[in-house]
Image (cartoon, rainbow, N blue to C red; front, side):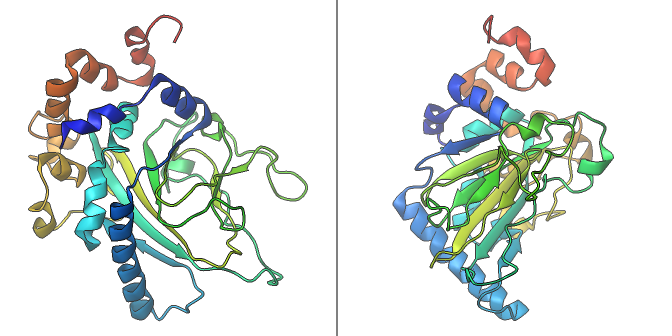
Length: 296
């Protein structure tokens, strides 16, 4: 991993924004060349999935485990402009747990049943089964491959601050939420969000397909959502840190009690950021207070 990524470490303002609102926008996360490579790879996956599943041209295509579908996707695992934000939030004992490509073609404004996506929290069974308040187990990064800077493009809708609520937000008589906002960004933007934040898909009534790739990150002691083990063929393409992010390790015990060999990211951060930083991001949230400046 190139140490130039350190220039994109989380600022105090970004940390405050993410903690209070539950999401963070990273403009220009992808340069034009990278965006072009991703679009080429994503369009190929879309064509293959539609043919394999006999999807109607107007149907939404959702492809899980996208990370293994090409090097263009693999490069995003430790992307310089987003990965430093991941380790600052979750620490060094992290992995990717899901990769999810969505192509959502335009819908007719004339459809009588036209509705936005359902409001939800990510997480599957942990959502109903865990005690409240829920801990932060994971987060996602959405890399926007198409422009969603206009409302009709169907960008993600979020309820800021809802990641800290123990109950579902209260709906208005129109079955909506007064405090929801639509995230409107240009292609190449990344949006990080806490999996506990209530969110939904907007409605795409534009003339372009809405394209987004989500990468989810979690602690290594959680199982992957769309994979069990990654093929050796893929792991052989990865440096040690990417192997960690792909769920690799020395043995099973290392997922719960990692040695330095299990988490090369920790060693890399020790070298480039120092022991105090590594200890700070590896603490439980309530223990981090001793590392923050007074009044933080």
